[in-house]
Each structure stands twice: as structure tokens, then as C-alpha cells.
Length: 502
Image 1 (cartoon, rainbow, N blue to C red):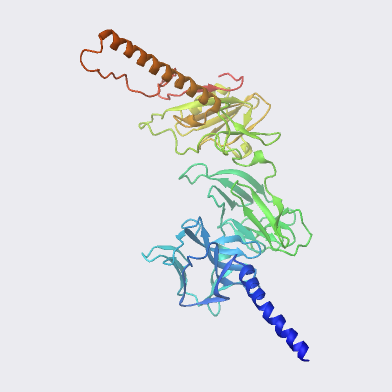
Image 2 (image 1 turned 90 degrees about the vertical axis):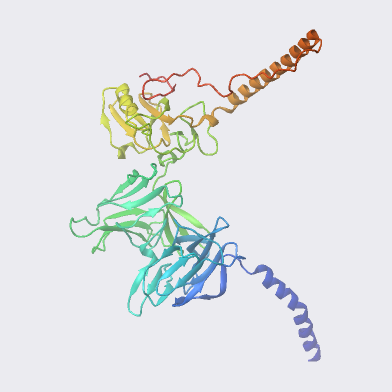
């Protein structure tokens, strides 16, 4: 008995340090939790971000521990109130994506009947504007503000870029990509993806549309709006309010195949709309609205060219290298800044064998020739470019800065694209630029050496006497405008690509 007791005593003492170190070293730090994670927030709750936390600070958890509401650290110095899927650390919802707060212990989240995120100066970044009794996080990932008898507010009614299964998406809502460029909205009988190519404009360009097939049920006019929902059975359905039968089904790869993890759809920063399910260790891609890279709204960036066969990127101006995901810097505005209808300076890229990736969703005019199509755009200060199909006579004009075009083998499809004066010059061919630099450097050295030799010869001839050396100054330096001349009010430069003619 004494031997057994002695053995246990020795074992406990030798294990104690190891157990302590194990707890210290292997305690998870993402997501970081508050001193005591709560399952509900009551009135007079108050919290501030902990400066020592680098990633996520938990404030509220669902009963199963799969979801967490808390402070998400963004770009080291900013803060978003976010809902995380704990196993993947993936944000499913942000309260304040457009107005991030500072990650500071002076930023506060309070619940006084309303959830309010603010700073000491009184700036309110976000508020629910409610008079509730408590905040809870359901095991569906839905954050709710409740009274004893009703739900006053819920995060499911204000999605950001993600929908989870059984979350209703109505015609009054929109999903917005994390970069703010793309959105998803519902129409009367369709689901559409839109691009905000034109800054400050409310007229977004639709680039993908899925119309309800109405196989299992029809949309009845006047019987209510449609809504969308991710179904646990593996599809994205559209429904009409009051009718449980779907008016449309977009099947996932796991359609009618049960999965144990959460399903979600997300609007991506590249404009695609993807579906996923959680397999216990990672998110598995299960659905893509747009399957081909060149059908995305701008896969190669501004003034890019996407190869239809392989999805490779190049530039509309083939003197420009495609580097760092773009050809030219993104441009904004229009060409109307000259005032009194005058058109700002621009230069022009012409390219044959191109078409728009979403031309079926754009308006067009029928014209007799490419030249007529080009002139319509040239004289319009709101027009950035035009694409003409010589076979159909369709002229598509763009009232937003040029995005990616698709390269095709048909040389009868021709494009005309304006570029604001001065844009893209730094991206011109590197070899050409280096060559010019070497030549200029050699000339400077030659002139310098010749000048020193000539001055020495002059001094020797004059015997070193005479007055002081005079200072010579040449004309002001700078680059000339080159051989291009102003051509009327449009004042543009033209770069011809391909074999098309005006």
C-alpha cells in the first residue's frame, strides 16, 4: 500500500509541471474569448476591445458553441462587430462593414435596449435602434434582440456578403462583396448580379441573371414578392411569399445528398456567387454561378483582355504588360470635365477580335458600320468605349470605365476604348522603357564629357584668364508631347490594334 501511495505521489508531482505547460502552450487563441463567454446580453452590458488580442474577441456564443459574436480586428488598427463560424474562423456577418471603428479600449459596444457601437467623441458607427430586453445568438447563426414576447431585430434581415441555410433573402435586401464592387439582388422573377463600375452612380451594370424556371410552381402576379433561400437539401431556391413550393431550384453538386455541416453561399470579391458546405475541417466548393473565368465581370482588371480558350490575361493595348493584376490603374468619372460640353483629353485603343462578356444583358443600337458606332461614342463625353459586331450591326456602348474584354477569333468584332490622358504610361513595355533610359543616360554622359573637354580647351586657349565662368542655362526640361496633334475638341491619341479599319 505504501509503495502504491509513493508511486502516485511521485507521478503527480512529476506530471504537474507538464500539465501546466501543456495548458499554457496549447490553449487555442482563435477566436479569443472574453473572461466569461455569455449566452445572452442583458441591459447595461458594456464591452471594449482588449488591445492585447490580435484577432477576435468573443462576446456572445450560441448554445452549441458553433458561432460567436464579437470584435474582429481588421488591418491591425480597425474593428468590426462580426459573427464568426467558430470551427473555420470565417466571418459570416458584419454589423458595420462600411464604417469600421478603431481597435481601441476607448471604443465601446453597449446594450441599453439597442446595440450601439461608438467612440468617446460620440460617433456612432452602428446601432440597431431598438428597445429590447436581451441579445441572443441562436444555433442557426442568427443574432436577435428580443423582448419577453417578440423579436425586434435580427441579423438575418441585414446580410452582408453571405447567406446561410434557411436564411430568407428578400427583394428588399442585397448581398455586397467585401470590396464593395459587386452586389446580388432579386427582381420580380429573377436573381441578378451587378457591378458598380461607375463611382457614385446608382445605375449598376448587371452581368449575370438567372430567371426563375417556374417548374414546380408559378409566380402569380400580385400574390407577393419572391425570396431566396439556401435549402439544406443542397440547392438555392426561389419562392413566392405564401407558397412553400419553389418557383426555381439551382442545384448544388450535393443536391439531394445530405451533409453534416453548415451550408452557405457568398458573393466573392471577383464577382462570382459561390456555394459551400462545411465538411468538418474545411469549406468545400459546392456551387458556382459563373463557371468560366472570362465570364466574370472583370477577371483581368481595367483594360484587360481575357483569352476565351484558356482564361489567360493580357492587355487591350499590346504595348502594355499585364502585371500585378491590372493593365492600367482603375479610372473614374467621365470625359465631360472640359465644361460647356467640351470633352476632356483622352487617347484611344482600337482592337479587333474582342467582345463583352455580358453583352446579352446590355442595351445596343443597330448601326451600319463600325465607323458610325465609333463616332457615336467619340462625341459623347459620358461614353468610355464601344464594341461593334460587323455581322449583326449591333453597337454596344459603355458609360463606365473600361473593364475586361473577352478575346475571340472573330476579327469582325471590333472595339473602341477611351483612356484618360496620362493614364497607363508607367505601365508601358518595360524593355522599351529601359532601352530609352539607357540611351538617354549615354547621351547625358557623352554631352557631359564633351562639355568638360570643350571647357578645358577654351580655358587653355584663353590662358585661364578673363572674367569668371558664366552660367549657361538651357530651355526648361520635361517631356514633349510627341508627334500627336490635337484633333478638334476630342483631342485624342489613337493606337491601332489588329487589322480593323474605320
